Image 1: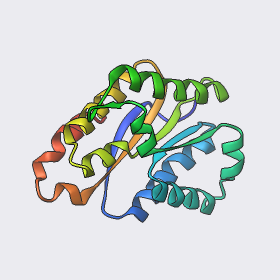
Image 2: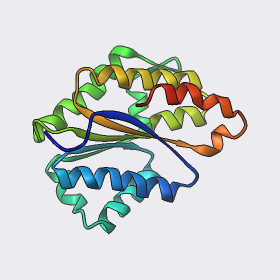
Image 3: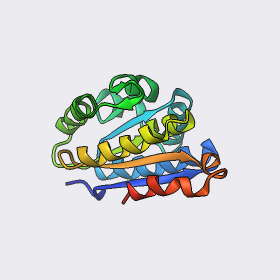
Length: 173
């Protein structure tokens, strides 16, 4: 088994550059341990994460060709399982479960490292209940798949209502 522990962590960030460095650290440590990765991000964040991985001398093109790095667009992925503004449990489990199974076949007996920005996309759009439900669905999916998930939330969203971050924190290890 890979060296990354199963978990569900949250990172509140002030700027995109610091988030992308932290995500690249998380993924880079996984690649060094033989763990594959899934990144679900907006196109701008994805490009910054890729640039950070390359700065760490990770051959992004090679790990993508090998199926050890899967890049998914956050908005498109949300579109695969959102119904009437809320995540559908079965569609989420089917879609993301299939991605995790596919990546898991590449490197059996490892922990997949995943970074997800979908919750931040929902939160920024004012869909806070949908974001919290999505966090719950990730925790449920973790009962069936071996992955370590890192979620990112822009800190600026929480300054107006400091107590609003509690439902988010409760869902993370």
